[in-house]
Image (cartoon, rainbow, N blue to C red; front, side, top):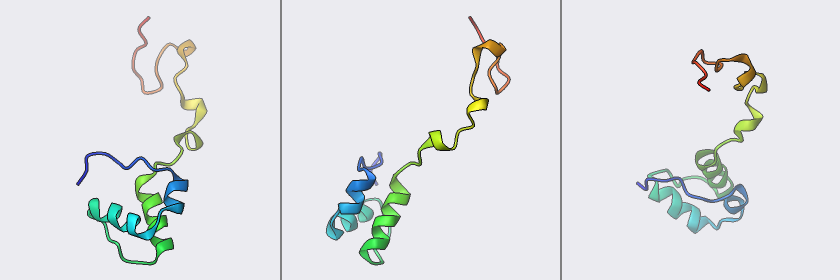
Length: 77
């Protein structure tokens, strides 16, 4: 099994031929069963990280004016 995630974009997976998807999934020890649409969705869900900024509570971010980080640690100047 490779040490790193593949570096393909969502568009790459959506346009990837079936033989290449099969090869990629096999390389990572994953199943190649299903139709092409299923394999593409599976690869996208497996190898692409969601956009973290969409799920981040902006009010919980570190603000130096508060004098401490939101996890309770000390701020050193």
